[in-house]
Image 1 (spheres, rainbow, N blue to C red):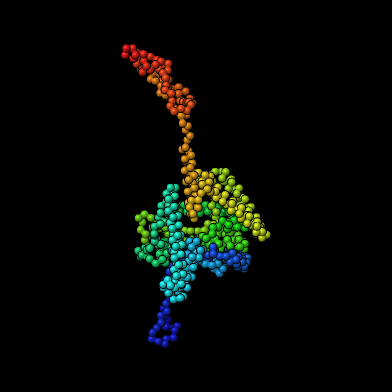
Image 2 (image 1 turned 135 degrees about the horizontal axis):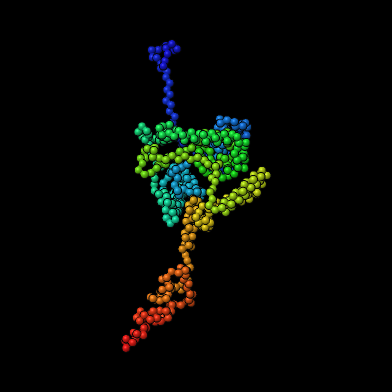
Length: 534
């Protein structure tokens, strides 16, 4: 509050000096329409310019060792700042448009149909927007607009035809995919949670308030609390095991378990990164690293070595984008507890180790992996000698080997084996369809063919015949009723020549007549029947 002795009083109105500390830490809401580098639109000379600027800035970084956790965090921040700054200066930018129509394809834009229509419209507007077919600018503008709309209608027809074809094929091979494609045609709201209620019961509709409510809910949810059900014994056991593991690592003579990191490992990991993927919290995409140059590889090697040596994960790597997913059912959509949090973190430098069902597939995969490592070394040497022809040949070989590795993984994981790969290579499922659907459809086709092959059997006509029934009281019937060692042996059929009808069986000496109970004839031709009729 105000103190009279410290200020000269010149008025009857005394001023009041106060300070407020509200301690409000609002959750930072990422702008979904922020402009990001459009690497697919950058020309080769622009990418070269970006690489040169990045290498020039990286060489100015301090060459001191990273000894503390603060040094590691500062080093990562400097790398991120250099990559994002030079990409912002050199690379063209584009923003995500969530309202893009599916028929707005590259074919419409590359044919300059939309560009011509816009140009004709500007000419028509510059002449005062005259109306009537007698004006040339109006006629040209309407003609260009009609061509543009016709092109959009054709692309829309192709898109809907593709959707219906995918639905038809999915109905035959995969029920889950069928309903997924069917629901894609339904219009849906862009916001899953239009309003969220906090713990006090206040309903929030503003995106920032919704994000703040979710952040506070997950903060309270993941904060460990010691209550009456807290398992202290389990906590002590975990801490004891962790301390034992730490002591074993301290007595280890090697600096890093598994050996030191190498530049070849960093380059191999960078080559596995996919293009045009969403960035993380630091707004760095895979293209920032792919086009960073050799100096960036050395900086990453230094960074990863320091992280493992000091046993410290940078704080920026622990942050991720949490996406609430509705659990479904009859749960209220205005409650934070009705949403399951999903955090997306980058795992490009941590490749998944495949599990194998067949040893020969694993051996072939590992052999090809060794060849790929050798090609990486050759490519590095070719880059140093500036041998462009060798780089092109090595790139083609690597592409073929990676395709082969993919086929080995498909064959090992599929119940149909290599038949799935053959179906996957022989026929395309649909244009511009994702690779997972192609593999699943090829696997289903291979399984159907395998099942049909197992059910199909070759049965020659007239080859096998049912044995005739033995007459009652005959030796054949009596022998079949008594168990013996030969009674369970398969019946030996006599191969008969092909004919339309089988020959009628004649009486045998062992057959018994049902009229006189004598052997050698049947009741139909019994001699006593003839004598009785006479």
